Length: 194
Image (tube, rainbow, N blue to C red; front, top):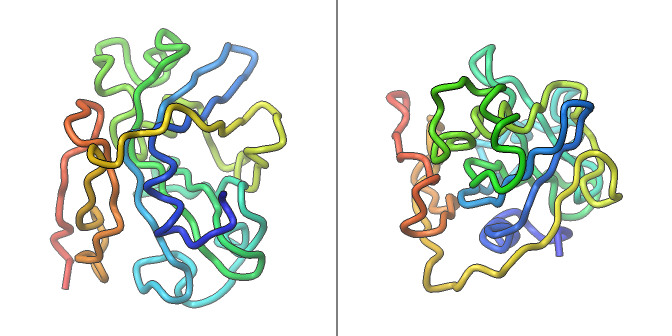
């Protein structure tokens, strides 16, 4: 299922659950918003210029986690998709915490509402307790980080639109979300968008 191009995998990941178990406990998030990046064929992708030490995971096996630090403060996470040797990944933009809400709130801030615990890619990474050391983790092998299929989202509830915060190829409709779900982040066009 994950060994397909990111733009095909992305809408199918809606409704899947990403869980992370640590000594503190388990936090599980049902995905409600994702964004596809197509590697070398996509100028907005971290892999658009080929492999580097930072993006090498994107060129590896499908089902692994690619993490990166955004704006020097937020760890964002992507599910690697596609065939080995060809970068393709789905950014996990938002989700609904279905397990470990108290732990997620400790990580995000005691005043954070349930709706906002994993709303936005940096918030999702923080709620799950993800960092640099999780880069390359196998999400399907059944370890402490696990990605599992969930209830299939009715296709009539899946919306698509422009990607968020990218300065090039921002108008590509590869952002997918569950229409009407309160955990979906607000669309913001990058001020640098061309």
